[in-house]
Image (tube, rainbow, N blue to C red):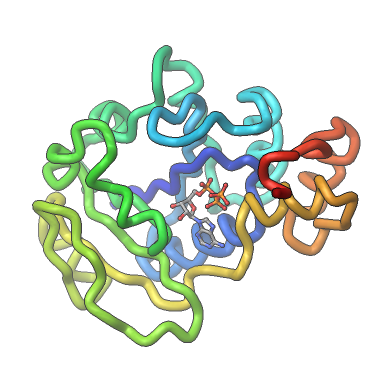
Length: 209
Ligand code: ATP
């Protein structure tokens, strides 16, 4: 199996790294790909540009052998649609798309969402302490009870991974920085240094409101 955590990473934070490493251990795989959604088609424009978000992703992963930064969606022109990346990445091994529980509800709005079940499994990243519950399940997917069940089919399974989220979000980081605060506890240290040096996120007026 190959697992992918896609995101705008505006910026990448400790929650993303924790989730990727938790998934890597739970799935028993060597690496998780962190795929930068360079030009997200389904949400508002990221505040940091592609170059800065890519630099931060590289800084966050450069000392972690189990995380691999991917520029696939930077190199592909046009909007960064997950379905196109899955089509490019697919091969003999099943693909696993890691996704936060909160983001799962948006899946039906994704470009060509109906094709996803034939391309990947979903592993839903759950918050610590959350009671296991029946998750929202996008069309074509079927909930499975164990990570090992993912191996048994090529795609279309959905598994909920407990304790995979930290209470951190990129919008929280941007808000703290815009207010002149210290976000270092939420970020890999090289990413915090980069944000300070480049002066990123200092004027996020919309998000402060
Ligand atoms: P924003 O606050 O701007 O919405 P974000 O923190 O959710 O950003 P994204 O780059 O949009 O970051 O997220 C990429 C993926 O990581 C999504 O599937 C998202 O659900 C997941 N994710 C986000 N925050 C966490 C977290 N704290 N723990 C685990 N997964 C997370």
